[in-house]
Image (cartoon, rainbow, N blue to C red; front, side, top):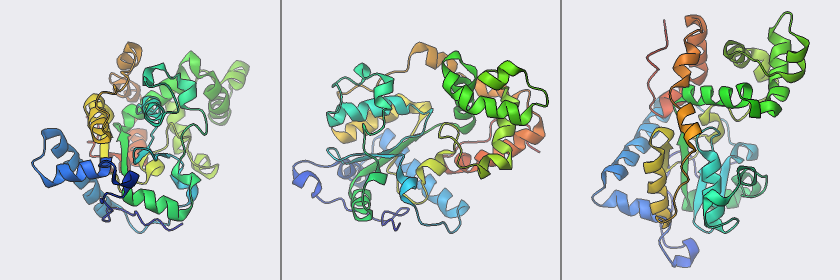
Length: 314
């Protein structure tokens, strides 16, 4: 599939969007770039530049994108938006916001249950369109994604899907296989429930070549660059989980919906997000720390995250 909106090519910022009735989010961002920038607009310009330079420095020739590569890029035609969702980076709330903006749900995103936000087909993805329609949207729409420190995201996925009681479905689907593959004498209950996978076992599963031969990683622990292809698709806004409130407000201001409040995570989620990775990696050997860092290294490089200070890298 040939994608015209390849990395960092010029795109249309004319008034064709919505018949020229109002300025599109991409045009709004272009206007900010042409005049005196706010501090936040300058932050986002620097992030775009850093991503472009990192892609140029760290990526080699890449294959053409296939339609399935675009399934994480959600489309809001009414507002000229493309959002690539990365699980464990506030994607539930962003899906709620897009449903509210597009009129597919209540006007208050907080009123949309999580299961409805994630229901298949509620929001179209770029994978649903023909190559010509994909390229038209890539040229004219504002594209954004939100990322997170890779090991904090990995720790959040492990805790939420393989450790917590509400992750029983994931535990049966993935935990039982991890137990069967990695434990020499697993208990029968663990083989049935998969509820007690240790973090070291989870990392060994990720590093096992058989896991990749079986297919792509599950989206909750797949690398952000493998989900969103930021060196093939141009992203105008790179939001970060660490500055979620400010970055979400910036996107909504470009959309022309500054009054729409981005849902705040519950207090339980905020507490759980406080540095769990350092605690989990504390008991992992330097050898495996280095191998896992190598697995997620591209996300660290592309999105300007430093290697965590707690890692014992040789």
